[in-house]
Each structure stands twice: as C-alpha cells, then as structure tokens.
Length: 149
Image (cartoon, rainbow, N blue to C red; front, side, top):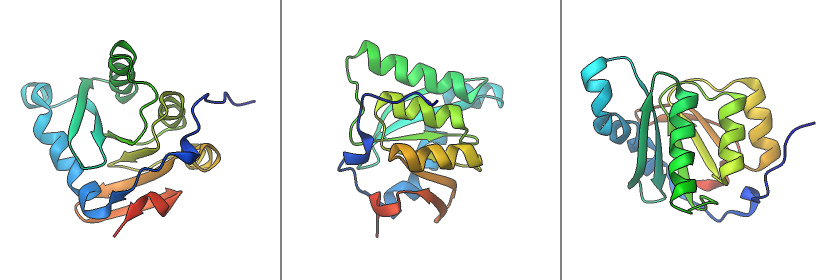
C-alpha cells in the first residue's frame, strides 16, 4: 500500500509555459556553486511558475538534495508547495516522486529519465512528470495539461 499525501496536488492550478520549463535546467546549473568547485554534486531546485528560482540545494545524492529543499520549505512553513516546480539534476525515481507528492509539489522535472514506478506514481498522485528536460525538448509522462504552449 502506498502512502497518500494529505495535499491534493491533482487540483493544483499550476500552469507552466513549455519555454519557461525548458529554461530551468540552465538556471539550475547556473546556481550550482558547489558543483562548480567539485564537479560531482546533484542539485534540486524549487521554482515558481514564472521560472524564478525559490530554493536550491546540492548534495552528492539527488535524494538528499530534494530532502534539503523540502526541509527548507518545512522550516519556512511553506508546505504545501502549491504552484511550484521541482527540478532534479539526475533521474526521477519513485522516491523523488513520492517526496514531491508529500510536499504538495504538482510538477516534477528531471534532466534524465524517470523510472516506470515514478511515472506510475505521478499518474496516480496527479503530479505532472517531465523527463529528459534538455534544451527545448522534454518528455511528459503524466498530467501534461500543466504545460502550456
């Protein structure tokens, strides 16, 4: 049995233009100061619908980077993260999708592939899941209505 979020992300009114979404990996990378020094850290970035970076955290593991973003939001009393996009610098796993759901994030994007379990959970949870977000290209695996042209 899967854990259910108390936040109904399926009803989140977030809409993000595809052009804004396509710019997020570059914005994330530009803000990764620790990566510049080490060359080996993952990042998780929380963005508004306008593409504005709200929070960025880095760690050797993308799961830890997401935990740091969500922890920041908890400390700031910002949950649920209605109207936000979470971008991860690697793959989108089941666990990252679950973390997004628990935090009330309606759109999870990754620069690499999502797992099948991530896509299944995103569909169930009402999360828009984007993978292979590179340049002007992306694959949308669940709830594409949040991405506008």
